[in-house]
Length: 547
Image (cartoon, rainbow, N blue to C red):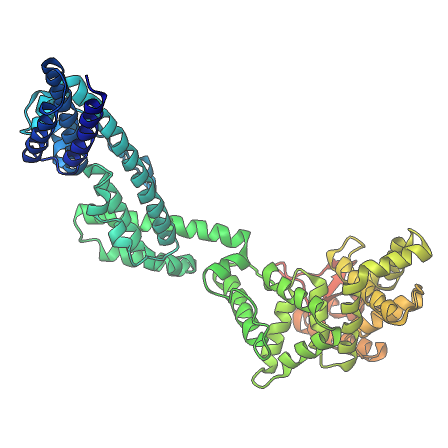
């Protein structure tokens, strides 16, 4: 046997096989077979070897035609294999499109033994042995099944994304295409396709109502449900079932929304578009971005009975970072200007004060309240507090190096002595917050002057600067008068207002009408509640009497 002839025949067989794989018709098979035979006949092989080479060539070309047909003619695969599915998903109440899509069987292409006995009309396939044909089919089906699984995963991911958005009330522009029969039937059996489409349509029908229903009052929601029921009373059974499924889905959304509201009211307001996502800190825009927060807080309490204070940690952090990132004088000037710019009314300022007072970060809250004050003295006192915020670490180290580790206790004792009587005890959250502001004011002054003296007089001066006054004793209780008002004037005004209040509440002959019978508790912003023995005096609804 000539090695040169052997190699030439082998190279020819490879070229012929590739040609047939690209064009797997019977006519091309016959053409390439004849070319191969011609090469073999012209070789120097013995007659016996030529017969063997022709047999081997036939098998190679038959396999090539089969591979080409399996790759390029889907109907051929269908004639030899079957797409087998498991049981359809049992659609239960509340099962969403993405859950059905994830749980549904995507089907597997498997060889159908019964189909292998028939003829396809293609020389290559019909000439192969059963074992060779099954081997080629197995390899092709494995690749196809892997591709189907990958395709199904991509479809599931898309369905999940569209379902998640639909749950928020958002329907994407390609929603109908994603949930179309043509798209889904590539990977799912008809029963599961129908279930996915049915649930997807329900989601789409519900979407426009989700945000509306989530923020409705109980009365509005009850009226909405009544309206839906009245409009669907004459529907056939199937449509009434859809309507009830519609209402159940909305009810579930509403319950989840109200749970979210009780857990994170600021996040709830933000996600429902009731408040801006962030404060606008550009010049001239702060007031207009805080006022919607006040309105949303009031509406949330009125509609849902949930008391919401402040603006949320994200927005508080914005203000805190601005305070730390600017010169103290610049921030105070900025904040004051925002409150006095054209268009901001007295009513607006009171609303902004309410939001600022409700902030969790009481240091930032106090700085903002001082900065927005009409009193130049109050605005000036904000500057040392800001300085204390920025330089606290350095000041604490210097104090400890000069006064020892007891400086923290000394601070607390001095501050408690000066303002402790105003609160319900040293563990009172309001006391801790106000004491912190006083401490920062003192530290800010220390940084400015380089004087690290810490005594009662220093603390008293800080209290006067931050609060604009000192504690006032009345009927066994202590309150903080308004900034700049003398204790004498405050005492007279408080007595007169309280007397009028009590007479109005209990009448001019009641033993409860005398102001001397009551103590007071400061509530901030010039408001005071009545106490008896240090305990709030409350009305029948459990609310403290205040004025």
